[in-house]
Each structure stands twice: as C-alpha cells, then as structure tokens.
Length: 271
Image 1 (cartoon, helix red, strand yellow):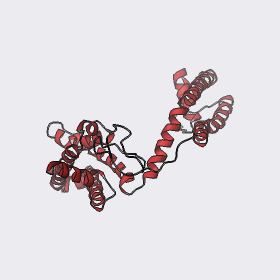
Image 2 (tube, rainbow, N blue to C red; image 1 turned 90 degrees about the vertical axis):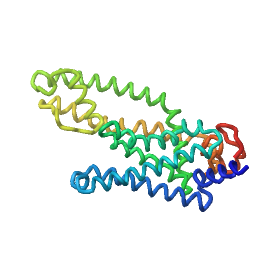
Image 3 (cartoon, rainbow, N blue to C red; image 1 turned 30 degrees about the vertical axis):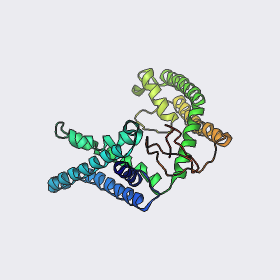
C-alpha cells in the first residue's frame, strides 16, 4: 500500500499539472531544460568554450544526473512502464540523456544534447495551453485527409518543372553554360518556381528571360494551392470540440483526454 501511494504521489507530481506540486515540478524541469540547452549553445562558442569549458562540463553532468533520476522516476511511477518508454515523450526523455553518456566513448556526441529542447513541448500541458494541442490534432488530421490531393499536386509540379527545364535547356543550352544539361535546367526551374531565386543560374536570351517571368508568376499561384487544400479541409471538417484536460494516464502516461473521461482512450486504464 505504501509503495502504491508513493507511486501515485510521484505520478501526480511528475505527470500532472493540475496540482501546485505538479506545476512547480514541471516549471522547474523546464528551467533545467532551458539552462542545459543554453550551456550546450554557449559551449559551442570558441571564446566561451575555451574559457569556461570545465565549468560547462560540470554543469552538463549535473543536468544529466538530474534528468536521469527524473527519467527513472517516470518509469517507476507508471503502472505500465513499457508504454511510457516507447511513447513520444519517453523516447525524447531517453535521447536527452544518452548523448552525455555517449560522449565518454564517442567524440562530438555531446552536440546532440540540443535534443533536450524538444522536451519543451511539455510547456503546452504545463501552462494549460491544451487548446494548442487540440488545434495541432486538427491540423494533423486535415493534413492526413488532404495528403492524396497534395500528392497529386506535387506530381503535377514535378511534371511541370521537367517540361519547363527541358524547354529552358533547348532555349539556353547552346549559349548559356549554366543550362548545360536537363537536370541543371530542372534545378533552375524548381528554384524559380518556388520563388527562392538563388541566382546561380540565370537566362541570357530574351526568350529565356520571358519564360523565366512566366515561371515566376506561376510560382506565386502554385504556392497557394497546398494552403488552400488544407484550409478547405479544416473549414469543412467535423472535428469534435471537446475540452481536453491536462491529466495523464497513470498506466501508460498518455495524454490528450477529455475533461469528462473516466478511462484512458489508449490503454483502457482508469484515470
């Protein structure tokens, strides 16, 4: 019983954000994450890395020990540790501590510590900004439903740049060394159509410049197509607007449950 109570208390503090203790822990965790990422960034600057290298090294190991203990407590506080370990946040939590240990064997792996910045995604839960999570799910669902249309559109764009690149090769190829092959001409077409405009390859003939102007105008119209497809799906979607709570499942640590949910929608465990 004492062990179960301890596990429940740890789960409430570590995974929940509705209680003062849970919110204080998560805010402290965010500060530690920001500080550890800042240390990695400052260490990469030569003048700071050379002057404060040992200090940064000690800080990094301190953060790593802290995050390792936190990761172990997260595994202990859930009834089904495997679900947490294989979850998105579980993998990110593990990746955030591995680089420091790998640096003992592999040179340069410490630069991967910036992965810890991904853990800042917890801020959406901590400060009750769960509305953003709901909108993220809405956008993800719209992208999934719009994917067939987007793939057809991308196929059309691929055919279009191939045609334009071939035409440009015929026009500019004999007089312009930049268009010495169709692949180079297709590269130019992609850069121009997407309005990136590196300027490393430019047409010299009047006909080539006229074709460039047409491609630029087409580019503005093409950029708006994927946005229109996704926006139309969002407008016509029948997404259910349920209020999402900050509660995490004590069995699998999954989040995103509605405020009136009594059981986890992923593993069926009681909330």
